[in-house]
Amino acid sequence: MVTETRLEAEVRRLAGSVPDPELPVLTLEELGVLRDVRMQGPDKVTVHLTPTYTGCPAIETMSADIERVLHEHGVPEVSVVTVLAPAWSTDDISDEGRRKLAEFGIAPPRPHRGPDGPVPVTLSVRCPHCGSTDTELLSRFSSTACKALRRCVDCREPFDHFKEL
Picture 1 (spheres, rainbow, N blue to C red):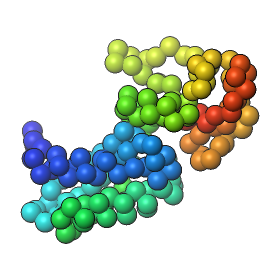
Picture 2 (tube, rainbow, N blue to C red):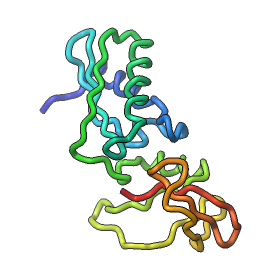
Picture 3 (cartoon, helix red, strand yellow):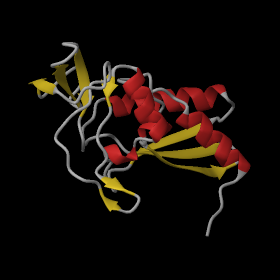
């Protein structure tokens, strides 16, 4: 078993702290797209990222932002590798990430699986403004392909819902 060095842990913390370009309220660590960080020598690091979906245009910006942050912190050679398997899932979003999405006014995705197996299926989406589950779909797509536009029937406020993937 390979253990993470202190330097790798610090580099992972720095890379993970980069904000998502489409959802800047979340870091890449909270979004769950940061898969691995490995030191390849004293001056070189390889970072593995998984996009939220194949062809996600934000992956280029994420990679450039990670490179910039690590260069600013003294890592001279940074390689960011896109990894497609295993595929990213909304289950990869951390609890803190889900909390931040709701606080930001975006309904977080419902979990697909829990620690003890499948999560019971529910079709309701909770309004991040008032908490009501009486919401309606306005559009399958919103500001990004990952989100749908919904409206709360009770408070009448529109909101984004991060789709389950």
